[in-house]
Each structure stands twice: as C-alpha cells, then as structure tokens.
Image 1: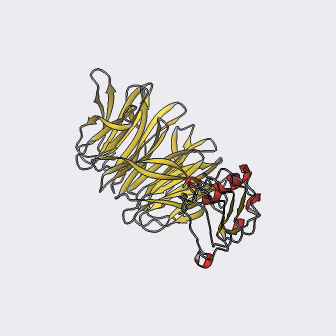
Image 2 (image 1 turned 30 degrees about the vertical axis):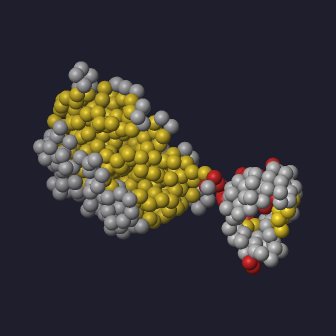
Image 3 (image 1 turned 120 degrees about the horizontal axis):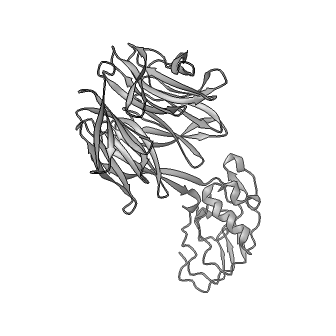
Length: 449
C-alpha cells in the first residue's frame, strides 16, 4: 500500500480525508513493509476488529501507535498483539476488547498470552487403504507396531506393519480365510495368536511362526457354539487369558474361552437367544465385569465370581434398547460408558457407586460403532454413522459433557483404533462401504494463522 514511501515519518489514518468514512476494517500483514522510518502511526476509529500477525514487523523505530476507537475481538487472532505489546517499547494508549463476552470491556494491556486457549487439533487423512474392512485392531509385537483388518469382500485378515523410514503402514501378511468378520490379535508369553472369527466355515485360532514367517492354524472353534460371530474381545483375569466371541445368531450364545498353555478351551456360555452385538470388558472397583449388548434386550452387566471362576448376572442397563456397541472410558478417575444406537440417540452414562446414570445424549441415527480415545490431555469420542458424517466430540471439563469438534467423511464405519508411533497419533477407521482410512491427529495453533 505504502511500500514505496521510504521517507514517510507519520501516518494519520484516523482523520485522513483520503480514507473514506475512516472504515478500513481489514489490513494486509504487508501494509507497512518498507516503511522503516515510520515513528508515529494512528489506526484509530477505523472499525478494525483485528490486526494481522506481524503487521508491525518492519517498524523498528515506531515510538507511538494509536489503536483507539476500534471494536477489537479479543480471540486467538489477536493473541500476537497482546504478546507484542508486552515486549515493545512503542507507546500504545489504552485499547479495549469489544468481544467476545468473557473479555468485553477489558483493557487489552491487562491481558496476557496465557488468557487465550489457542491450541486446537485437526484429524487429517494420512493414508488410504485400497479395501473395505469390518474390523481394525492395533498391536505391538517384537518391537514393531502392527494393525490387522478383516476384509468382507475377500474374507481375509490383512496385517500391516508401520514403516519407520517411509512413515506409512505397509502390507506385511495375509491370513487366508473364507469370510472373516473379526481378526483379534493377542500376545501371550511373547507369542502372537490371531483369533479369526468367520461367518462361514467355522472360526479359527492362528499362531505366528518366525521360520518361515507365517500364521499357522492351531485350533478350530466349535461351530455349534459360535454360529454367527460379530465381535471378539480379549482380556486377562488373575493372570489367565480369555477371549469372548459375540454370537449374533438367534440360536447362538456368546462364548468365553480360556487359555491353558496349549490352546483356548471353552470356559462359559452367556445367555442364548438374544442376538448379541458387542461385549466390553472392564473393571469396576477392582471387580472384572462384562457388558453384553444385544439386539433384543437392554445391555446386561456380568460380574466375575472369584469362587466359581465364572461370570454371573449382575444387572441390566434399563431404557437402552437397540444398543449396537458399548465402550467404556475414564476421565479423571471417573468411569463412563457410551452406548451407541442405530435408531435413536446414543447415551453417555457415568458410574455413581452402584449404577450407571445417564448424563448426556448424542444424535446418532445410523451408528454402528463408537470409539472413546485420548491424545495427550484431550479426550475424544468418535461416533460413526451410516447415513451422514461421522462425528468427533471433545470432552469439555467445564460442562462435564462432550461438545461437537469435527466431522469425518467415512462410509459405514465399523471399527476404530488409535496407534501412537514416531511422534504421530494415527486414528484408523474400518469402512464397510468405502476405502479404509488412517487419520493423523494434528495440533493446530490458532494464534499462528
């Protein structure tokens, strides 16, 4: 604008008749580039709500700056000005915030950079996988990070390994199967096993062998017990390893298997005839529990009986029909549940000593998957949808509720998994009708824009 006026010493914009209506409103960050001799500058009464970062970068000998009479919005875009005013020797008469409400009427001189919460985040697509998937699980083995997907079209389990040089996931191994719907890894005594749940041909357990590198089938799961598997959960109680296979068939029942050093053997069957959809293992006040969600009844809570070494019915979570998935999470030592529903609102429940109490509902028409996770101090909840964008929510400590944060364009998501590797936080999303995606969690400084 005034780049060629090298010898100008003073600019009075506020009363300059060549500036129509004294209504500049916006300035470029390069407006004063080249005006190194400028000592006095008035930008008063110009309806400015903000100033671009580094606006005064080239004004090395500026002694007086007048910004009065402007309706400054004191948000992250003005944080740089607060920091600059703390450090500069330039004389600046008092100016005030016009907005937002929490800063309205406050002197900008009295603000500090710490008054602004300008660190946000963004989930950006990092890698695309050329297949659809029903499940995704991440695991560490032999010092490397792996993820495994169940592919509905090919029916196989595909294992990817993280490449520390290229910084991507690369194809590592396939487990050939007919109709895999869930591939669940579990490492026991430094040995890797993979539970492969199939719709047809029975489900199987594979063991990883080093020479040659391959998965070898070591066990079949009785098809009379598991007819139509939908999900697999692994857990450990008192040093023993177990896995539970959720059975969604009308005549089936969710079954629990126990490891006995040679293989997994049938340990217990939970209620039949309810078309189960998901099971979640958690510990409440030191007591192991399972929460089993079903298509035909509200979620059922089972508690571990130490004397009988089995799960026994404990309670039912009432008023929550058609629950597709239950996931638990902890925030500041408080236990919460999220119950996602395909029809109706999903629910957030808090444990209050004897029972779970509903504290929030989230719109979730078409939701088949939910995933609570944390990155640093930020606690997120990802709610998938078959009918619209999947929604990421961020926990607000002030309201003790989740607030909408970001929408992700995912086609029929069925599972999620977070992996942290090489200073990257990668969120994997299994898609039933589109390409499987990996998102990177990026930290964004809003004051730097």
